[in-house]
Length: 64
Image 1 (cartoon, one colour):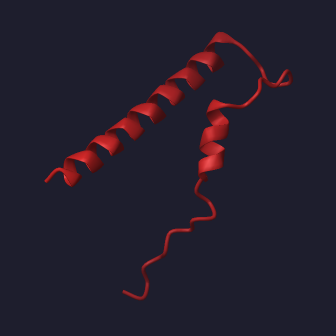
Image 2: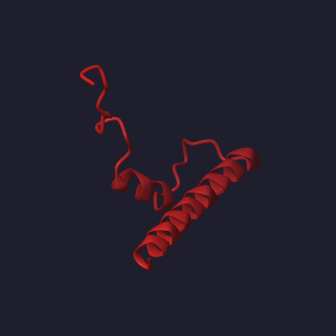
Image 3: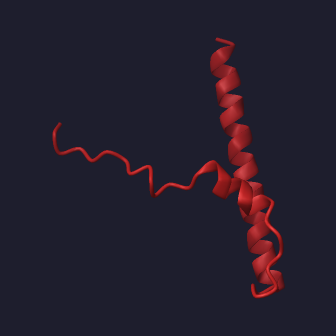
């Protein structure tokens, strides 16, 4: 059991980085085409769906 690696929490994104993904100002230097907008929209939808699933699991476990 001594060889198990502990997760490095410094490499994982914090809450401010996730919220910054949703509420950042548009950067004029960043490319803006349909493919990038679609990719970011799909990423935002998947993050919201994941959070809804986590909340549903927590509620389901709390009601047991």
